[in-house]
Amino acid sequence: MTQRLVELRSDTFTRPTESMRLAMYGAEVGDDVWGEDPTAIRLERRAAELMGKEAGLFVSSGTQGNLVAVLSHTRPGQELIVGEQSHIIWYESGGAALIGGLQLRSISNPAGSFHLDQLRATIRVGAAHAAETGCVALENTHNRCGGAVLTTREVGDIADVSHDAGVPVHMDGARIFNAAIALDIPARELARPVDSITFCLSKALGAPVGSLLSGSEDYIERARTWRQRLGGGMRQVGVLAAAGLVALDENIQRLAEDHANARRLAEGLETIDGVALDASGVRSNIVIADVTGLGVPPAEIATRLRELGILLAPAGPNTLRAVTSYEVGAAGVDRAVSAMREVCANLVPVGA
Ligand SMILES: Cc1ncc(COP(=O)(O)O)c(C=O)c1O
Image (cartoon, rainbow, N blue to C red; front, side, top):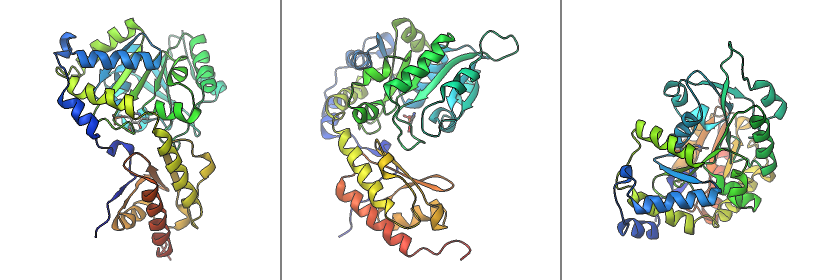
């Protein structure tokens, strides 16, 4: 009997649940560009309430949400400060530079957060020859930093430094509910210090499509115009919003299981010679393992794992990434650890 594949490449692979599909089937809809889709309106209000903001906006993806968010805070020629490991700088195809005319300036953030002194020194306002800072963007949890969780204190301190200079703060909270569950606090506490926040419905929350941007009424009005300019007005979008509402109702609390499974995976991988990671540092659903010690490129290891039914993704020249979700239970995690042990036992290091 062939065993199911264990999908650990990303939580974006989650497939909609039966309750989402049923909700989509029955969704009440209207033309959202005319502001008449009742299900989209409900979802936007719900997002705003969960984030403790005045208004929300349904957008097609996390990438569109971040782009709309920063364009709505800035003017062309300004600078956007981001962490050098941020999703915005790595995986959003330079949209903020191309479409927003923004200069992206990155500061180091190996553990997710910024050093306040470095942030203070990087923000530039009021000099004619400088691209003045238009926005600071954070990420929580932090994807490329192994799902690192920024605390309310860290977010608050960064927001204070930015606000003292008159600069608004956006938070890419694609996985903000993972951060909230890891910290055992409501997500709105993490959103409180920032001016805008996006979160994704389509990652471990399991909806097929969509993200929400939240902020003040005025800000969301500007964002709605930017969404339209970017072709993000989606008409009977209630079909998608309905799945999003189910995701918020049913799938937030269960994220704790994904975190436990990620920790279980990390604890297993940590025991394999040549695989370097600190399982005690795994706080959410992302595990990044350094495989330099195996002497074989991560892509080669991923190919061998695939032959054993385990899907993991290379995350850099020396790292492999695994992301847990409801597609993977504890048994899948244990299979992944055994497969990794088997692959590693049979590897011939490059040049050996
Ligand atoms: C931190 C973070 N921000 C934004 C995104 C973009 O989301 P989407 O794939 O919906 O564009 C992702 C996607 O993985 C992400 O991990």
